[in-house]
Image 1 (cartoon, helix red, strand yellow):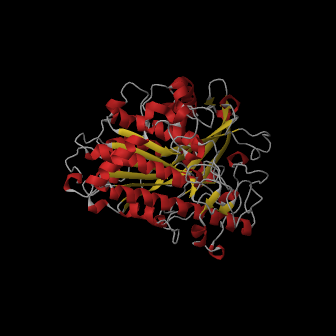
Image 2 (cartoon, rainbow, N blue to C red):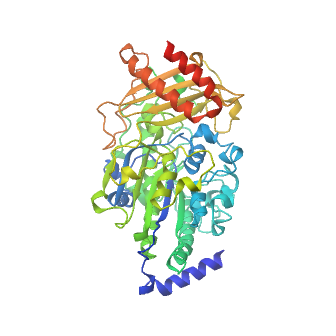
Image 3 (cartoon, rainbow, N blue to C red):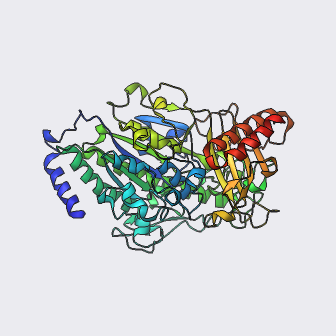
Length: 552
């Protein structure tokens, strides 16, 4: 593999400076650089937050479209990636944690990377694109061209189990750390004086793959590419070079305005964090250290984004490549008393999503614009395929239909919205149903042992969530009236998605307030209809339930 990369690199050195290396403007298809960032919420300067030190992501926003209301379908790494990379929602992929994956029930599905491979593109990937082992072998040749195999994620490829710091060869190094030891549970801040952290290794490998991609693209075969790069930070542990911590003086770090659970929140909605409860907030000193760690890790990640952008420019690929960057789900930094993802709250599900491209594709008048239209990560497969010039529907013909919607009309300014709702969900398995906020995680729990599934709908002015008992035999929720365990209703009227303010929303649950009964009934019906269309094997059950609702 590497000998081919060396040959490609030599070719580029000889030709990139010559007229023969000019980009092929007559190419009818566009290349795609797809950057997936772990645990990234919109904690970015260009999302209206000053001094977050994210200049490279900000440059993408300046030259592209920022989506201010983009949402993950489930707020945990593996299932979210199974959803967005298959183009199907979690109840269709049947992947809700780190045990199962979409290939178990649907080995024939075309994945997002596989879509490009099937269309004749080079399909390359580096880093944490899929979550390790779900699907096995990073989905192998069903997703990736030969040069990407065996797939390399430095965090797992060398068997180092996601240690924070490694050397350039990928071997474990014990880091020298300062400023550590604060935070709830496994939330720790630290900086590492070593040559490389895992994201640097991921980008090192991505640049080698980009050399080969450029070689094929600039050659007479004019072969396009899809390159996915999975960056691990700001995933825990929050670690970065000291220079990134220095950008965020501790005395300048604020804490969450609402440090406890929303008023009247049902306990099942809370993601437990060790012994912490929704009513036992972290003290301000620990919270400032933890937030500083997240900010520094995000700044370090942004530096690696800059390396990717510089590499595109040096290889004369900027004018033929569309760049998509997004988080795999959101994160709470003390809001609602939470220090995790794993929720159906706005902060657990909302992600930054930026799509940027060359003038030949995105008119100057659209560059730097923002979209307030609702969007979802499940929309990425049809969107990126259509942007690249692929006939997406013919490439997945005969398979379970894709469940996303192309965002291209929003990007080009042709429509203000392409959907009126986004949907998210999250399972729970509390050990004690009388205290459902304690020890309720499901990361490595057999899906037949889930006890509750939470389904959430986000519309323009509201978020509504239902927590329903789980049917372990059929792996579906109980959508009959007796299946409802708890509900949440949050008012977003008058709240603007930009500039971002993480403290202003979802602090009072209105689900049991009589004044809001009408909107609750409407959203509950819409939520149930979405589920009805998603799972064909329970339509008869839902049809009966919907008829009961109508009759009542």
